[in-house]
Amino acid sequence: MVKRLKVLIMGAAGRDFHNFNTFYRDNESYEVIAFTAAQIPNISSRRYPPELSGKLYPKGIPIYPEENLVQLVKERDIDQVVFAYSDVDHEYVMHKASIAIAAGADFVLLGSESTMLDSIKPVIAVCAVRTGSGKSPTTRRICNILVARGKKVVVVRHPMPYGELRKQAVQRFVKHEDFEHHECTIEEREEFEPLIDLGITVYAGVDCKAILHKAELEAEIIVWDGGNNDLPFIRPQLHIVVSDARRPGHEVCFHPGEANFRMADVIIINKIENVQDKSVQTIIKNKSYANPSARTIYARMKQFVDKPHLLKEKARALIVEDGPTLTHGGLSTGAAYIVAEKYGCEVVDPRPFAVGSIRNVYDNYSHLSKVLPAMGYGSEQIRELEETINAINCDVVIIGTPVDLRRFMKIDKPAVRVRYEIEEFGQLSLEDVLNEWLKDTKI
Figure 1 (cartoon, rainbow, N blue to C red):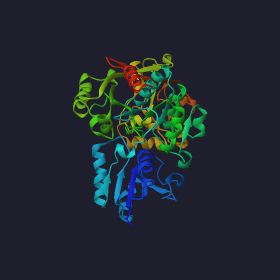
Figure 2 (figure 1 turned 180 degrees about the vertical axis):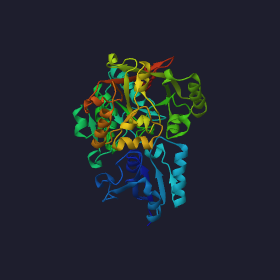
Figure 3 (figure 1 turned 60 degrees about the horizontal axis):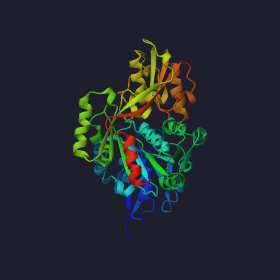
Figure 4 (figure 1 turned 30 degrees about the horizontal axis):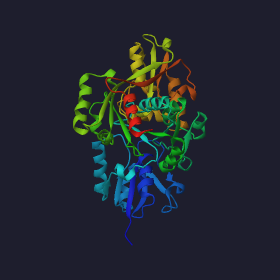
């Protein structure tokens, strides 16, 4: 009998589980000893449940903090460490490789051919080179165009299984009550709610193969909405990748964003409205050698403010931005801050008022100072975010998150919400690309 290679999968409750499900779960050549968890709070010290682990793992698989990596490799005689999470720079990945190799294991990155699922329905994938590039507004724009042409669209969203995994194998969202039923975090609601408001059915969860089967029963076209800068879990016939003109150069120095950049059929250079031309030229130059055959769309983020009369010059404003864009994405400000500057508001420093895990976010991400990241990985952190907001003396709260925090949080001061949608300009648009694609695929 051939010895099974002992494997440890480094993850963050997303790509790691997908890699296991598609490549390792029923593969008798490997024995997955453990997962490790990073990036997201409160996802270690769990167990990948037997209900999802398959016949080779009747007791499930333990999940440990990533800090235990070296100890696990040595004590469990691990043969291969598989890196399986996203939006980290190339140097970071190689540091992890060095740690694994020094501990005595091989270091492995699984590619698209090993992990992409094939669908019986046409698939459009929307991915990015970094978190916060404008991927979600792009997905909404695509859905609107397809629906206007009478197509039945279902979105399959990159998983965010931060709760009880056995309950999150397959999740379907069609109304706001589904968020409560599935005990969604702020991060999940930010991705699902805008699509639900457009009348789009959304699937998410841990087991993408089972999810895809159900989505195919409803959909004429499936849109894969990626998370962070991860690769598609489902093989696309049209792969659209969003780059960020506010972060020029990141498209070729972050993992796996560079892989997306190189694989794309269409590259969107987004947020052009707030940058110098040299930033755009940097992305164009990188595209010229990394993916010269990809088509290019130029776009900006158009902002909408629901109560502009509350934004007055010199008004003391608390800025609340999308959490992952600031943390994983590395940006120091977002849409709400841009609006505050536009109206001449005085920005309040939220750091002295942060409580609990919100204070820890500032300790872990030292580039943040002028904004409050809307972190909400569970009910306790949502409560701490609410407490932090209400402790700050200001005239107005400017909310720049994709989900309206006022729906499930009591904010005791006037609040303004900033929404943003992608707007293309120039010779090529998403509508042009989709019209051609629909004609070529005869849908």
